[in-house]
Amino acid sequence: MCGIFGVRGTPRAAALTHLGLYSLQHRGQESAGIAAVDEAGAAHGVKRMGLVSDGLADSDMHALRGSLAIGHTRYSTAGSSSIENAQPVLARSRGGHIALAHNGNLTNATELRFELEEGGSIFQSSMDSEVIVHRIARSSAPTPEARVAEALEGVEGAYCLLVAIGDTLIAARDPRGWRPLEMGDLDGAVVFASETCGLDIVGARYVREVEPGEIVVVDGDGVRSLRPFPPRELRRCVFEHVYFARPDSSIFGGSVDRARRALGRRLARESPAPGADFVFSVPDSSNSAALGFAEEAGIPFELALIRNHYVGRTFIQPSQGDRDWKVKVKYNAVRELLDGRSVVMVDDSIVRGTTTKGLVAMVRAAGAREVHMRVSSSPVTGPCYYGIDTPTREELIAANNTVDEIAAHIGVDSLGYLSLDGMLESVPTGPQGFCHACFSGDYPTPPPTDPDKLRFGCGC
Image (cartoon, rainbow, N blue to C red):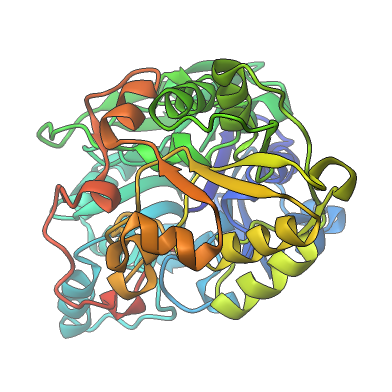
């Protein structure tokens, strides 16, 4: 999962992209970068490891001139965490510069990469996004959009792309629509962002979603759309509504906050906790679900866990050691609320179980008499090949343990998950058209031939 942002049609393109990336920081915290195209058609870029605020300075923006810019915040699903894998990818080909920012994960990247290497291509990174850049560079199609369309022929998996070729900005979304990509208008400039919160921060007016299988072209002639690929069954990622997207965003045609409140209300009906004194969330991604649970159950919502907002999202840290350390410094329990009480602790998911076990121990240490864990999604039982860092079943606690065994492992008095039907029926445009493979095992595409995906994982 990554955040991508792009704009064409304003001399402040790089500065606006810089600002837009702040609102997409939750989608990736390993690295950030911006590429801009100047009036001569030359592309210049800056990439840094770490957060947008850590690596991208205002002084960097002064060197990024031009009316077209794209940006990226990276969370690696595969591919090492290094500056070589930071995006946007920037390359020079016989047709000029190519800059590309990618959100998603290609399931046949291994085969595509081997094919390109057999033909003489030399790769500079271990991410699958570079595969698309090489294919664009090899295309002899007459227009930038035709080159992108040709490059995406035969590509399987999830992708939202922003590509700058010369002074043309191109947005593309895979035919199954796994990841969100939104389009806006800012005083005549065209803006793209992974979520609508990216449009909001720069003051852009929401126009519409880039549709599955669509390529949107923005150049000197205006905005046009093409659909070069045959339609596929819609498979939007339901986990975007459960966890990844910001609650103030609208994605896939619906409000994330409303979806999460509905998930919490359905959870309270399916798995009540009679006698509990109050409900609290594991902040921040579970806040809305916990509010929905409390509203439906008719018991108070309290702030019993306080989050340190200067620490990143634990789920998307690149290593398990980083996740464990971040949990210890990220949260603190409010003893005055918890001491002697029976409580409902709502989280959006339990993936590996390590974070949850540590949080339950913290709540117990603060004096909670009973801890009833409620989860606003179904058990995660399979790996995701489309942009979430769950590459093996061995890492997934629900793939190898019963609900009772998980409850004992994390140390709670009771544990309740939301049913798959309940989850899908709670999202605004559901229940059809969503990918739930990591919950149900219903994979829309064949899994990668290499079980470890050769770590050619997405630039995100």
